[in-house]
Length: 71
Image (cartoon, rainbow, N blue to C red; front, side, top):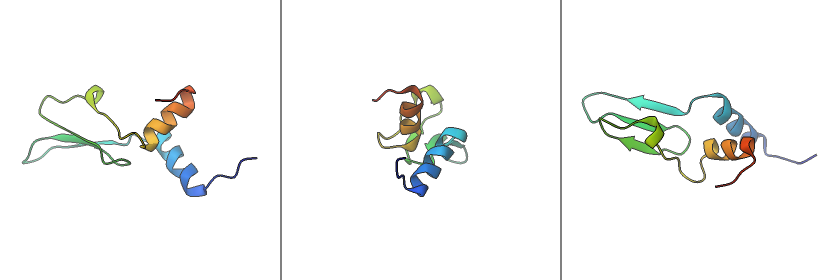
């Protein structure tokens, strides 16, 4: 069996199960941000499909693992 770091496995599992994107709206321009990679998408007309994660984000790694592909 492979020897994985427990913390890496837990981060990846959380990225698969939970929605990492958070929407912030207040006195300033609203934005979405990722809790894992701190990627930000700002703008009043921004949509989730326009959001781009950092290349080392656990969300993308989990997606690639589940679809058996790489970006």
